[in-house]
Image (cartoon, rainbow, N blue to C red; front, side, top):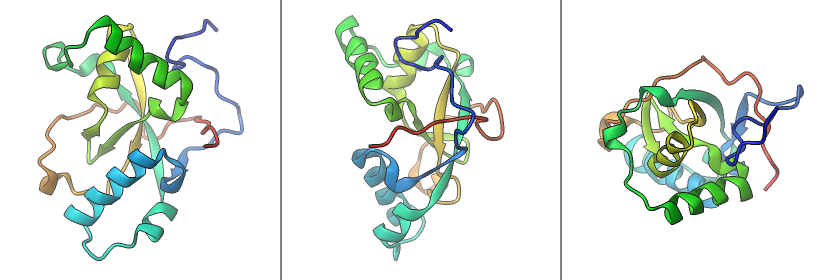
Length: 154
C-alpha cells in the first residue's frame, strides 16, 4: 500500500480496536471534549470519570463536505497540519457528536486538498449535546463503527 503523507491509508493491524478511551486522546482534545460535556450535557461531571469513558471511532466521508466551507490556508499552513498528523497519528481523528463536527475543520481541509476521501473521527454522541453547543456542520458516516483502528500510545 502506498504511503500517504497523513497516514490515512496505512494498513491497520488485525488486533485493532473499535473504541478509544477518552483519557488516551491528546490532552487538548480530551480537555475540549470534557469542557463541552460539562457545559452542555452534565454540569456535575467528573473529569476523572469522563476520561475513563470509551467512545467509538467512526469513519467520515470527506466527499460530502462543501468545498466552499473549507478553511482557507496557505501551503505552509497545510504542510504544518499534514506534519502534525504524521508526528502524532491520533490527530487524524476529528471530533464529532450526533452527526455534527465538533473539531477538525483544518484537518478536513488539508485532507481534502490532499485528495483524501475519508477520515477517522472520535464520536462523543451521548457525551456532548450539539443542540446546546450550536455546532451545525453535519458529517456523513461511512460505516457504523470503524472496522479496525489502532491507537498509538501517547
